[in-house]
Length: 407
Image (cartoon, rainbow, N blue to C red; front, side):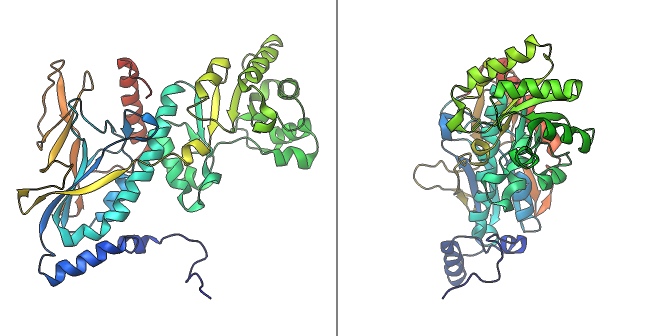
């Protein structure tokens, strides 16, 4: 009988990732062959790129750069990447595939790390991209990451980090919040109400015993109709009540938009216009706009964010010993991705780190790919999630100004 060796949980340890043990086997076989043939020290430039995006998205958010820097830190190589949180299109406005970054140096130094490199970027970027699209649709509304329970707990901090830098306002998981320097946010589970046996008793107990800096948001779908419980909560907590939360299962929901409208009407007509309506459970890009139109003020978004499709990045050789070369379907040579500060036109050119003029509006086009590791030493620091979040939000502001569609 086979057993799982030395594992309580099926996760990779940090030292195993750093040693390249999470790679695909053919990279180790390639390394062996190159050593035997004397080619292991061949100098190459390898390009990271993405050819298409899920959900029909026209743009994505680069995420995972801090972990990639940590993966290669201390190695004899140079690493170029987009800044963490950069919004990019998979192809520029002339149809050329957009580069995301480059690995430069001897292939034997970093070849076996292709698998973890792509994994670190693909999943983080997928979650951040989906979250940023949610943020754009729900502009000005409260967004909380509730997706921890839908994925392996080992990656809970990754899920919440990617959602937060993409514009979410907070996270519910305790460890994620601690890592991000935030206070965890959330309301109450149905279990509290069921164990205490009464909604009003549960809401009042929450108000009595939970720290005063925590917003009082009452869960209102446990036993009675949502609008009935909304009125009960407002009358029970009065000025202490910040909002009510709907988490009704699909089997009991009916038309969620009408439920939200009813709650809003019944609260308003009784003078509780300040009470917010928060919706969780099944929230996604497919329905969030309708719920906002109906009167929802905020959302706890879970599965659709934590289970967001990955961005399928690829890693390809584009230069060997100074000679441009690439496989079929890819363009050889190191390239730069430019973006106009004014009109957000994207342009791919042979590599340069100099600014240039936009061919569309005459504005300044800035190079987006920068060197983040010089001979293994970091040249930048992307570890501040609040700085990255501000950067993403500033780009989303520009997208709103330019009238980009969500997809």
